[in-house]
Length: 169
Image (cartoon, rainbow, N blue to C red; front, side, top):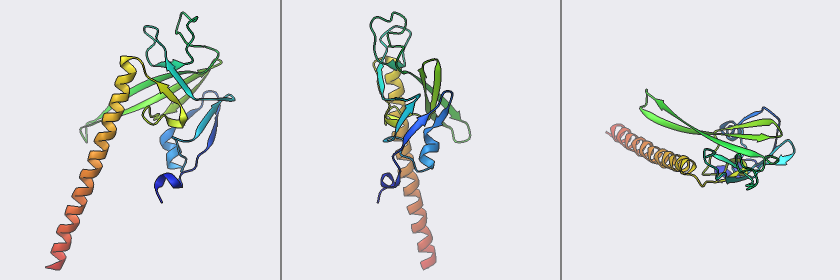
């Protein structure tokens, strides 16, 4: 039985000014990829990125009549924020994403949002160079984590083989 089979799919009801962390949901056995989320009674499904200049990483329902951001302001607007931290101890960069959702003058914040996985079934259609770079960074980090995991597994196997040879002697 895989780890995905043991996770619960939930309908999450979010309130104004709430902060939801996808990593915390996962630690509680909630599937943060296949679960759905509602904010102020509206299911959050994502949208397309604004095509207006200087509004990169803003997503929602496109509205060509809106001259400011090019999105329908009566529906949820999503703002993707990426952050890169550098751990001097391990000499590694970590990359996280926060998704802020604006609806009716209220805000919901989702920490550790995954653009690759479309966390909480919120699918964002990237069009700008900036958002595509965020997607690329997340993909690179995921590949690095897989390589690190394989490397640590290989080291553990090598260590166990060395220890079992010592015991056999």
